[in-house]
Image 1: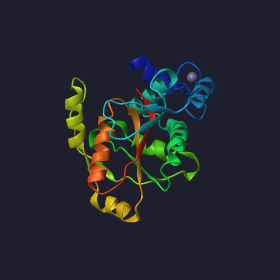
Image 2 (image 1 turned 45 degrees about the horizontal axis):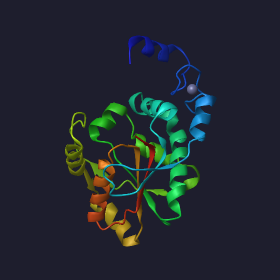
Image 3 (image 1 turned 90 degrees about the vertical axis):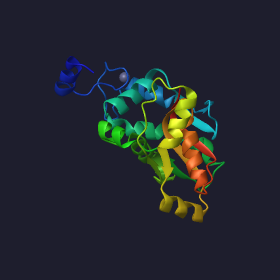
Length: 216
Ligand SMILES: [Zn+2]
């Protein structure tokens, strides 16, 4: 971010969140970039920590990576439905295997929420078309160290300490016998999803799958 970009954002109509050259439609993307996202095919991610199978809507590169960064770092909230549509396609891949599942988004830390101004994963979930699944935010994020510079082992430990299940909400899901599909923005090492799955399993829930917008 720099002064020129900030000034441009103030005085010109929003540029496409991905290519940043063409003007954006209401979706936050130009038609070409929107078409590129629509052409993505879901893939099975293969993270280091594979506590739960993860279907991603696409690889974390190009148009998708640019758009996700703008969504997260510059709070381009108008992109939420585009990511919701992508999550919906990843969900369609796992939905047959896990009927009756509820979606549990990975929550932001309080610091991330403050910096960003919105819960970007929950907002993308809410953009999944057609009420494909219920969203049940039943994880709580605790403060965690910046993962930059940590080894995969240290990241896994930090992730494990940073998420806990909300007791009353998980108890209600467990009593109803509803399985959980976890939702995150980008899966990298899989440490966060593994920690989330562990916390929910300890609370008595089944966590047969996860979906993400992108896989790095
Ligand atoms: Zn574009």
